[in-house]
Length: 352
Image 1 (spheres, rainbow, N blue to C red):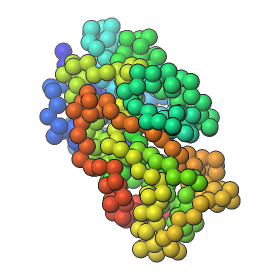
Image 2 (image 1 turned 120 degrees about the vertical axis):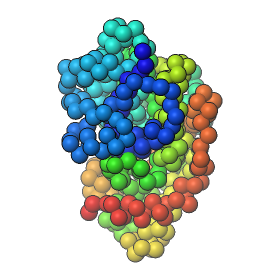
Image 3 (image 1 turned 90 degrees about the vertical axis):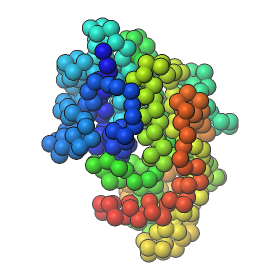
Image 4 (image 1 turned 45 degrees about the horizontal axis):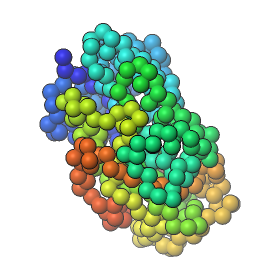
């Protein structure tokens, strides 16, 4: 019996590019490809890429149960909402029932973010934190985040691993970082929660680019295509029943390396100054008042601004290269070369 796959978030920045690229990926044979949708427009969009639309409420346990079991879905790629535990828990329980009925190995991939492995979430930053570290789950369990919402996301990530183990489901924690590049999907042209988008939004409102850290921290980066390839290569291993690492050893960061926030700010400032969006290309350290103004521009409390636009993350990718044979197309410094085009695309699609 071949696997049936469900992708959630197919209209989003990451999920859209994933759906586009799956068709040409020459994956091992599988049964049906489903994509969760919320509208007829999304249904038409996912069908372009060979996915069968499934419309159900992801926050309703009975609807999740019915959708997974009736369609005998054995692989779920969850690319939405890294914070709430409810939907992942519903999927894990339903997958366990499919396993019970069919005897198939079942898989749940949870997409979170690099913030959970950063200074914001109490992760160690005095050394490289490898995604292959055998103690990574224990490190995550002991962390305490600076913000309640981030702590909830941290606890959800750990709970996904714990519940999946309890129910006999193989879990994978997929970790995007600063992802850049144009989405290839049919949905959102830009993802408003991406860091470069937030830098542009705040700078456009305040007529200047501001930094939020007094030192020079770095953060892992990845082009959206390279990020997508990790999703696909992990799926390839799953479909081929090659048992990629899962559970407490199933962390996957997509990143060729890190760059300094200051270098990103400077590149964005240059691009915005060239277009007369900011007064000049200088980058100024934000004070408390400016953080409040940036928060207003971003639609969040000022305490959340450093979370979106700074911090230190030493999380380092190893598993994708070592286990999946992933070879990124773009080195980390490519983001600095791509910022000008990125800013142009954001400005064209940013809703004031």
